[in-house]
Length: 193
Image (cartoon, rainbow, N blue to C red; front, side, top):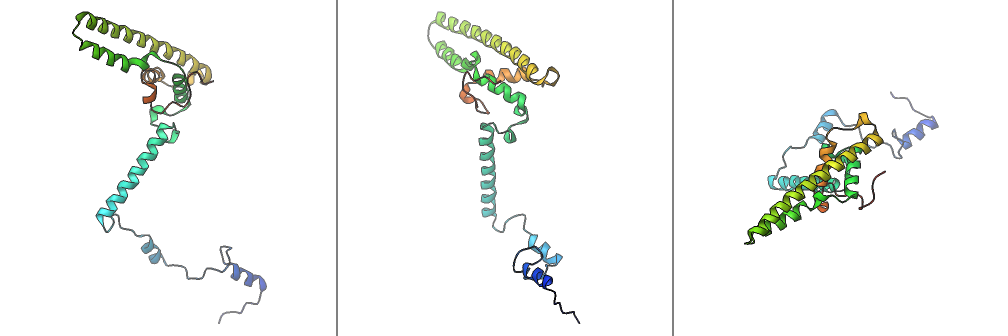
């Protein structure tokens, strides 16, 4: 036969319950079999069409969230090549300055239009102008790559500078500003410290 409790402290514990919440547990502890049965879910929904729609909706939502995160420069969503403080510094520096390479697509479009003109002299001038523009853009990329390398060595230490920063700088400098990903986070002229 069970003992009768008369202690008031034990009554207080019964009123609060084991987890400290009022009212006690109120039900028996579930068995392992009941727990496993509650956790069992089919891998594929009973209705495949509904399951597929839900999966597609979840995947589309995740992709959209990742796209927005990448465009905003959120480290969590950036690809490996764009992660880290050095790459952020490079992006901010390139976005703060005007690069000759930004105009490469508009210049090529103009040259293509001029090649349709029925004047051989104008076509020749357009092609030579394009080659001169390419040369100026390459010189600009080499110059800014050298400047960035020096600034990174001064800021992070010469031994800690990542490899591939000059290539990353050149590729960012050759893109039109609105087409860059991650999107520019600084205005022109606001160079990073």
